[in-house]
Length: 177
View 1 (cartoon, one colour):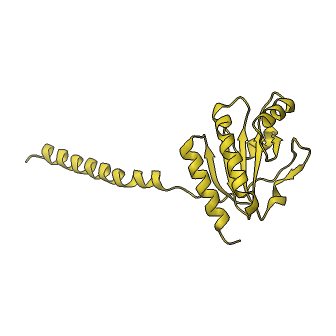
View 2: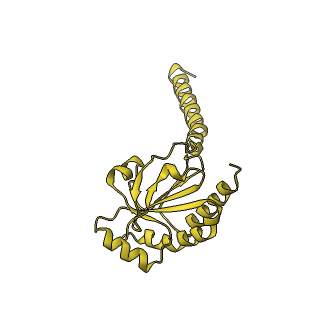
């Protein structure tokens, strides 16, 4: 075999080795999910029922923040499931805060909440709070543990997501404080 053939073989072996290495390396990168351990940004906002909601005062409870809007179809679809979660777990130190990002005003949200019979507090979320949580699409839910750490960030909604939320809440509630 000539010098040209040896270079071709060497290049081919090198290329094969690189491809093989990337084949094993890239899937690992995609599978490595850094667990969320960020502390939830504190806020103090007035709920539609005039209750003052301060996130840090809810320490000791598992909290689900639901960033949503009345005009968002998946948000509307999620609400009956969230109402059921609230009714199931509220006696177990669990709280849901509806974080409305509606621009149409408080009356629109108040009317919607009443029509959907939402029992948990809803706040009108200022842009700085949505930015602090890096909300870029809705619905976006944040599951916060008793210590105030964000354990899950869930974007979007469907029945599979509903089941995942339910099991994750149950798992965090069952953890020893």
